[in-house]
Image 1 (cartoon, rainbow, N blue to C red):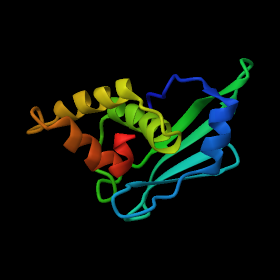
Image 2 (tube, rainbow, N blue to C red):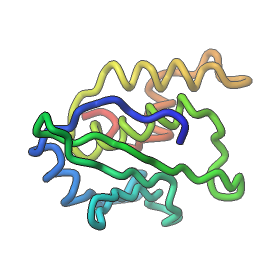
Image 3 (cartoon, rainbow, N blue to C red):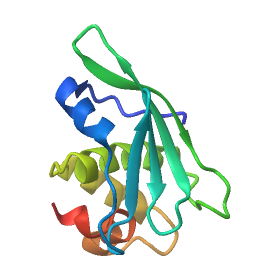
Image 4 (spheres, rainbow, N blue to C red):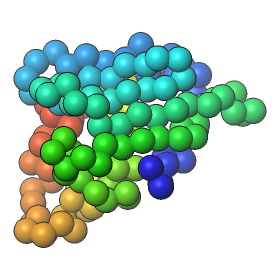
Length: 138
């Protein structure tokens, strides 16, 4: 990915991210798991891997995402917007895995979605549910 989230994740955040997240029903859209320092984000319905993020410890006592990959095969994942993917990666980790409100990230994702053709008036709740799933309201 050409753009990476700049967040400094605490060691507590990292421990929770490392434990992953499994969608509990069809209304949840993401499964997240970790191998070593790499976190994998897969769509729950298809099992397709969309993101891989490498977390590296910092001297500040936390971790940063220092590298990330996003699926670009249009048969698997249609998005090609680097800014959108940067926000989406951070939002899934923040809102879905950590259960944070992430209001700023949610607003930014809606804004980026509305830039697309025919989506300039998309309802925020619909946008968030379609990409995050039911857990998007936490």
